[in-house]
Length: 368
Ligand SMILES: *Cc1c(COP(=O)(O)O)cnc(C)c1O
Image (cartoon, rainbow, N blue to C red; front, side):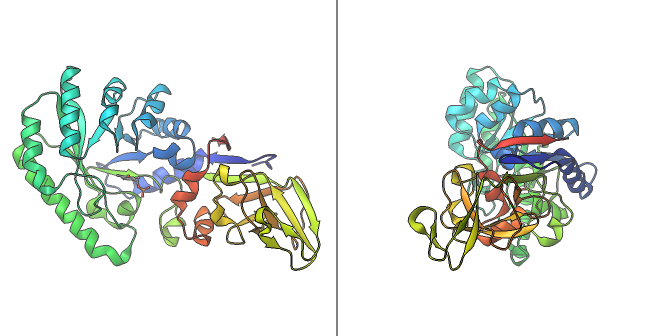
């Protein structure tokens, strides 16, 4: 890839294909694949990612919020789209755009049935979410009778799937808890199926569930982070390719004397005669202030340079005293080699947060 001349997020669709095929290779041939493309496909570009995965015959998509699904429909995506976290106010839009809601509480189930009836729907597909220990969204096991009675009372909706979400599938130390979640979910599914004349699909696993718990693959898996190149462990990261590279350029180099300061609040004080590089990317682009004051780092000509002083809205400054570099040189914030997961670790966060923080202001460049 040629050197960049401004701040860009490069997205490599070949890496996406690789990750998709790798994750699929872990599955039984009957298990369906849902690609999670919420939050602009983890900060990349949800339309480009969804189009590419649709061409690869992915079975399903999921987004978090309704308007994320509308964007995909407006872009011509025809694959089914599960909306993981809709609100009552979204239900008309959901039906108008053939989006499929996750229904996670009695209040939300009642509200959706009401709107589906008003809109004269027949067997509108919905996905019933159970809470098995994350305590975030979902029905309780003891709600099954209520759900069944509601489903039996209407022809407007049909439970296309039952699902739940693992709380710690990436954590070896929480294996016992995860196995209990899997067992509880299977029990919920059994109880549900004895009460209803059809068989909803079952799904439970996110990326780490796919990797660590083959017994939890069930009818479908829901992968997000793995598609984007991260597997929540050093071992799995080797099998996946980060699809996104965040790059920029050196706008200006300053030579400063011992005792001079850099940036707002004069947060950095030079110890010696030093050389600094100013780079056009800041907290408004997704480089959190947490990365300031030498916690975070960037790479210039393959060499690591700490971010010094406070991160500004539109700029960072790096100490490049010992780096052979000049104005206009390319800067790598993260790429396939200098991984976002390493930058995340420097500041007590995770790859998910780094990727999804990259703001819309950063130009996306797609490589096919
Ligand atoms: C975000 C999300 C996923 C994807 O998780 P990854 O760890 O990124 O694979 C799956 N299911 C639900 C319910 C989610 O919210």
